[in-house]
Length: 315
Image (cartoon, rainbow, N blue to C red; front, side, top):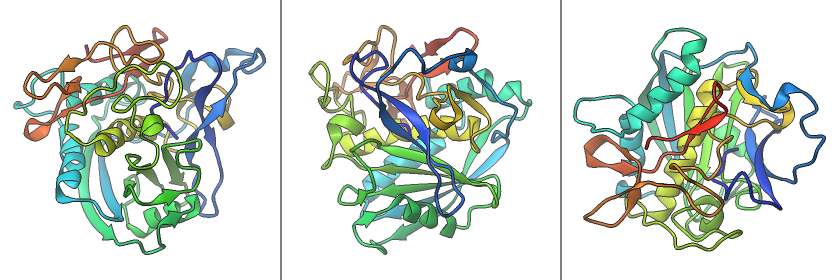
């Protein structure tokens, strides 16, 4: 998974991606606690590189499953973010589309020259079908029921009153796949009432590390703005490493990907407990680094640049 963790260089703990198997044939990646050791990277596996597998390109159909209650306002923040991934002349830079194009430029264009575009094709509300606690296998099942076409992505969002297996304890979001169906899924939970210090940082004080004042969320919703940052990270991982054999860093069973290789970095000069230099909305005081559709503003995670081994930010 890719939660927005505190920092890559926190001395005691680091979060990294790991792979787990599910009964649905999906291979989710989630963020687990990791204590680094000298033997973790015995060879050049520490390099984030292409492993000759599949990536997602072209027009990518996306379906949404809203599990639990989401207000119209909350849904619109997320939907506008998805629309923001497509460039349009009304989006001023720095923009979400500019961020998305960076993934194309640094990763996908190395595989083929198809331009990648997200197309929202379907949405469905699920009113607590399986109650207010879900296992990861149930998340995969929810994704499979969406009927997303081959090569597509199903986004499963769980409301703030829904607990998910290991949510908050060691991950905030997951992306996985059903290789038989040729589809992928992303799950992200609303952490506002459960663990905002872990999964909605920097819009809430972190659970660990320096307790600097939190940033104001650009859309006025700590949980949903936290979802956006985690969703962006998972989208980057999904298109560049959908089936576990694309772009990743480290051991295949404990890999980092395009955004999760830069945890906690949103702007230049980031360090543990500090997200980096970002922009401030002078009307609200909220922090952001990307303009989006319908006048929205968002905080986008840094993208790891394999050619320079640095974290690329929008500012």
